[in-house]
Image (cartoon, rainbow over all chains, first blue to last red; front, side, top):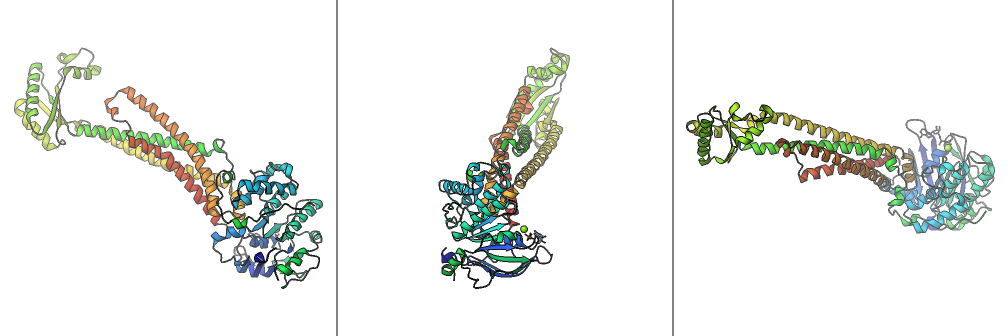
Length: 251
Length: 310
Ligand SMILES: Nc1ncnc2c1ncn2[C@@H]1O[C@H](COP(=O)(O)OP(=O)(O)O)[C@@H](O)[C@H]1O
Ligand SMILES: [Mg+2]
C-alpha cells in the first residue's frame, strides 16, 4: 500500500434518481479509505446496487460530486473513464461472464484489455484460477460450470489486475455458507495486498466473518454508519490490517 | 488458505491496443454456420448479375448507336435486275466522289439472299421476289436531315429509284425499347444495391445484438469505445468478406454462363454487349462496397450502443 495511490474515494452530497422517479440514493457523503474493507448492507431495494454502480463508473449521479483516485470523475470526459475502470475490479451480482469464452479467457480478459502480452498473462491467470480452486476447469465455458464455480471465475476476473478498488455485489448470494466464507477469504487476501474492498450484502451473518471490516448501512437510499466507518478520520480498528496500514499510508 | 498469487498492476501500462486474434475471439465466430455470410452472398450475387446485365445492355446500345450514327442506307427499289444494277453502280460512283461520304459498300446479293433466306426460303433468289439493291454509306459526320437531303439530291439524276434512310431511324423503336430496358436495369441495380446494403446493415446489427452483453462487459472492464468497435468491425468485416467473395463468385459464374449463351446466339446485335475492363472493375467494387457498409454498420452500431452507456 503506497500513499501515492492513497487518495481513496469521496462522495460529496451525492444523489441518484432513475428518470423522473424519486431519488433512490440521497445525500451520500463519505470517504472510502484506501486499504479498508467495507460491507455495504441494507434491505433489498435499499439502493446497494445503485451505489456500487456509481462506484464502478457505470452510472453518473444526478447530483453531487465523486472523487476517485484524486480525480473528479463526474466532470471527467467520457473517453477518459476507461483508464479509471481499469483500476477497479468488479464482481457483478449476475457474474457477467462472457459465455463463449473459457474460464481462462474470461479471467484473462481484463489483462488483455489492458494490453498485457500473452506470454506475460498465462502464468498469472493460471495461478489465479488455481487459487480459486479451478485449475482443472480452466478450459470450461461458463455454462458448464456450477453457480459457485462461475462466481469464483467472476471473482478471479475481478482481482486478476490487482485493482485499487474491488467492488462485489452480493458475491455470496447464491452459494452455500462454506463457499461464502471461502470467497470472503479471497477478498481479505486481496485487501491485505492493499486493495480497498466494498462488498454489498444483505446477509448480516457475513459481517461478523471479517472482523476488521467497516460497515455502511443503506436504508431507503440514505446511509447510516454503525461502525463509524465513514467518519473522518475513521475510527481506528486495532485488529484490522487495513486500518493499521491507514496509519502510515493515508493519514 | 494458500497465499494468493502475486499480482502485477496492469493499469500502469495504459491504454495499449487490444486487437488481433485474441480480441477477435470475443465475438463468437459463427462464420459459414451463421446466416450473415449467406445473406450477404445472395444479395451480392444478385446485385452483381443485375449490374452486369445493365452494363452489357448499355454497351449494346452505345455500340449500336456509334455504329449507326454515321450510317445511311441507299436502297434501289427497282424491279428490273439490270436497271437495278445500273442504278446501283451509278449511285455508288456519285456517292464515292462526294466529300460528305467516307465510304460506300454495295451489299452483295449473296449476303442479301442469306439474310432473306429464313423468310423466303432457300433458292428463292432475287428473281422470284424483287429484292432492292443495298448500299451501305458511311458518312464523315453524323447523319442529319440535312446530309440525308444532300444525298437524295445527289441521286435524283443518277438513280431515280433510290431511297435514302438513316440507319438509326430503322432502329428507332428498338433503341427506345432498349433505352427503357436500360432504365429498368439501372433501377433494378439501384434497388438491389439498396436492399443489399439494408441486408448487410441488418445482418451486422443482429450479429451485434446477440453480443450486447459482451460489449457491456468489455466496456465495464475498461475497454475503450474504439477498442470494442474494432473487435466487432473486424469480425463483421470478415463475415462480409466471406459472403461478398462467395456472392461475387456466384454472380460471375452466372454472368459467364449467360455471356456464353448470348455468344452462341451469334447475334450481331449482342456482339457489342461485352463488358469492358472498367465494367469489370465496377462489378468487382460491389462486394467491396458491401464489406465497407458492413464494417461501417458494425462500427456505428457499437459506438452508438456504447455511447448510451457511461
Ligand atoms: N435501472 C433502473 N431504473 C429504474 N429504477 C431502478 C433501476 N435500478 C434500480 N432501480 C430502483 O432503485 C431502487 C434501488 O435498487 P437497487 O440499487 O438495485 O437496490 P438493492 O441492490 O439494494 O436491492 C429500487 O427501488 C429499484 O427498483
Ligand atoms: Mg442489488
